[in-house]
Image 1 (cartoon, rainbow, N blue to C red):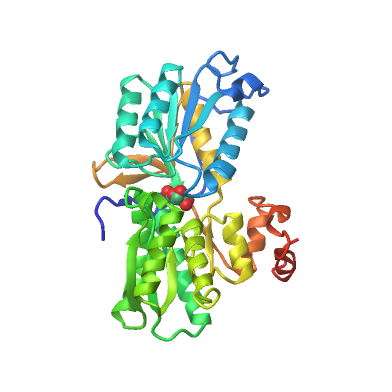
Image 2 (image 1 turned 180 degrees about the horizontal axis):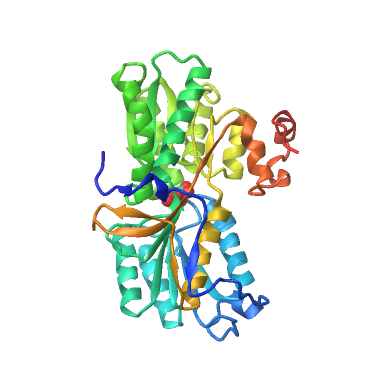
Length: 375
Ligand code: BGC
């Protein structure tokens, strides 16, 4: 088990939204202005402050550009707060340059999804030195000292993945299956938490000799292409892999592509995370066993509620705390509840408005959608 994990101070820290803001009820809203949405410093916003958001990339998961950006934008527009959302495209130098520019251009609140804790901390330190309020969004920056952290219960995400794989292997009546683990980026604290979660389910199975621990590797920067190469090697070395714990839908899809080449897709269950259109289609096709749905709208709403409060000069309170195990600090936190999705519950993701039937039920998937009860 790796070091630097984030642990909850209390189980009660995991809860759905219940933010309260000191010094204001958050009811002040203004008609959204186009200028505010452009992020221009000259935007005539109703709120004095300005929020800068740095997303990590657009390749490690579809979520950042298709979900997080959209929901954050909607929240800032509705509140009439000036904002600037940029994507570092996986480039750590660019990440720091964007942060510097945002601070120069008058950001009073900075929300980041770090690319690693080191560069994340450098950015948070600079922001704090300039009196800019800080929020870690989705990924905790270890030893970063952000004022707030908004995410899901990431250990639970991993537990659901482990339990999901067990369910699919049980359904297939797998006998002593050899499991491959395709972990997320070693620089992402979330990947550590996911692994803690699924290993908590799988390790007892290995110990009891019910399952066999097979290849176990991290994928640098969650790079989907590298994941394909890594999984190809895994399967070459161990052709009897019978289950794949992939840490997100992108990694899962990379494994599925390799399984397809070997006519093993559908026979070897693969997990995922993020409920991306691709992941859900892989589930409908029977090539992916499950994914984990994280209601990103709730995450974006919780983070933007904090950011908007801070932009108004308030000092919002968060419902819980998480421990930064590197610094020992208790970081005020909002942690939301993830949900496992299998073939029969793909419809729940559609019903929640996270993906539409139109984008999901294209071509060959139309019949599968009907079978899965997607309206
Ligand atoms: C996020 C996942 C995402 C992964 C790759 C993690 O930190 O929690 O939702 O799939 O990064 O971007």
